[in-house]
Image 1 (cartoon, rainbow, N blue to C red):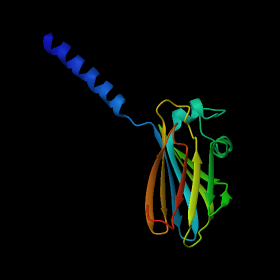
Image 2: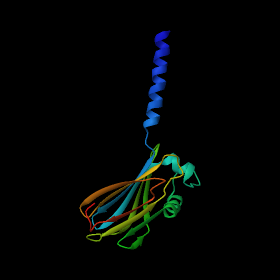
Image 3: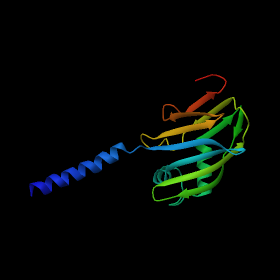
Image 4: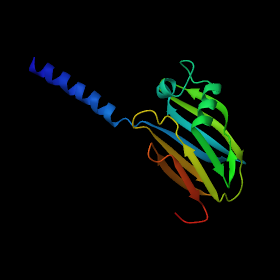
Length: 156
């Protein structure tokens, strides 16, 4: 009986530990693909459905596009870019969205990104990954840091 109780207690603790270590974040990968600049977004589907303004139990292009445009802004070399949602893939828990940003310009000098995507979810972070100009940079945005400005003329 004692072994059974200890086993149950250990299993419950393992379940709680896994929940504590689960990261609540979305990743935004800006990457050159051929002659275009793409945005690849990965996020928790359940959080988007609860907090992102989804009208249904799945992530639609229309709902996602509206929410993305409302909660983010993208600027490359002073030119405002509006992401165009091309494809949405969902599995049980996560969703991946592929967006077209623009034709690729050689040697981008500056990038400004404002991102408040799902910041109404407790402890949520947005991870911005920039893979442009043969350089990889990543940043963590959250409730206290909602915007980044990256200058590629200077070495960071």
